[in-house]
Image (tube, rainbow over all chains, first blue to last red; front, side, top):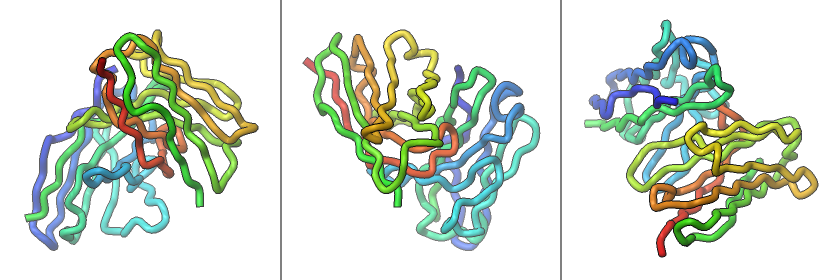
Length: 110
Length: 115
């Protein structure tokens, strides 16, 4: 199975909004609403930020939002803060009853 | 609060088998999927496999012939066995609750494959 496609890096200034894309196929992202987004800081375990495309777990700020159109899912962070600087990964359930991750995106807050 | 803790060797020789266990505390292993996810140094996350508490498992196709995932509900644990190790299996191995919606994670354990 091929990894989902994410941009290697994105950047933004505090207060701005950024969007990270996650492109798959009709066999994963496009076929199921089981897309999740994770935030990972250096040396730490990933943290679930979004599940089932657009749902936020308790405690995740509403600045984080998720959406999907066709085979591409997106994570948007509005009102960017310095603490948002991290690596972000998407994942999706697949038609083969497996899970696939994206390659990861490094977010830099300028 | 659910907590997960990986345990196992930090160094394994090439061609040997890696055995890792994840112990779940603060909640029952029942009624959930449980996953192994790994991350080679400096690289991205890779799904290894998932198991339902009933014992039904799914594996990454690239690892399937070498991988066994099992669950022991009496001990609130699930385990990973990965055989025929090579240097490419060197990674931090995380255990997590859920199949794609991984809401609780262990801290991860670094496994190095080297002679």
